[in-house]
Image 1 (cartoon, rainbow, N blue to C red):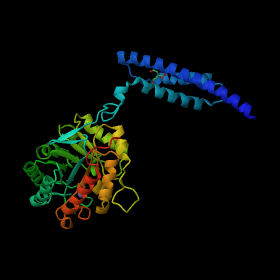
Image 2 (cartoon, rainbow, N blue to C red; image 1 turned 45 degrees about the vertical axis):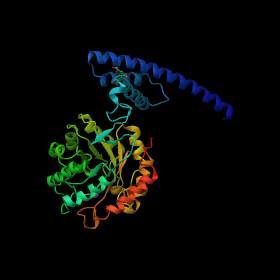
Image 3 (spheres, protein in one colour; image 1 turned 135 degrees about the vertical axis):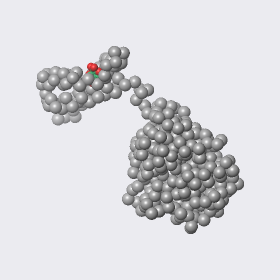
Length: 362
Ligand code: PRE
Ligand code: MN
């Protein structure tokens, strides 16, 4: 076949494509009208009987060269797309989606703004072990103008024999110190029935990675008017993470903060693999604030400053890090927590980078 012949045939296809495009869109307009009629009369949009009739008509008239099965498959795709066209765009978008809300959600916690124009630092020990232990960290926070303190009271541990946390006693310690130092406190809740209790003690309810798809917990957290920090599950896709947040928001609670904490991969040099690209994706797809937990994603103290800078540079609304007055004797995550001097050096590095001043927009 000469090049000229090929060009002529392709020209013919271009013409046909344009005609098909016109016809498909003409069909789309009629489908939308049908959609409006159906909505008014309360009729189901999906009509398998009608679809069967159309497929039968196509089969009876098909002269090839395409096989009837192929034609029916293509038309089924058109019916599917037509159904989507009939849904109004507003309803289709998730509540957490940027399409639904263009402006950033800003969650305020004791005067600190999460998701505002300045990035935020959330820090504190892995577990609440005693009043003195948490107080030492809190006093250092106060000395450096930090506003948010984390600490685990209920600890969902991989082994049932590991320290499970102080429970309500831990929440009481956090509450007391939060009041004394005027800090917003964040702690994880693992049982749906503890959610109302948590609202009395903490300023932000954390839902941990192991519970990201604990749907009853998500629904319980969505039913209170209290900020929720939702961590990405260790094997969760970004889509699953967003849908977990949707569970909370769909129950009425819009104060949701997302936290990337690394995902499980084959890599062993870090505890998890920090999925840094999830940050701009989550920022684009949703209107929720996004934090990066640099402690659990890496499990390594030596790369905390670098990963924190990367997180802020890529547009995160803040960073979460673990700090303990004496990490060597910590009851959980002893190896990865910074001591207070190391934490203050880390803070200096971040302040020096200028990245804590203004949020990088994506
Ligand atoms: C249409 C779309 C969806 C239904 O499942 C069946 C048919 C179509 O695309 O042809 C249109 C339509 O809504 C209808 O005929 O009732
Ligand atoms: Mn920890």
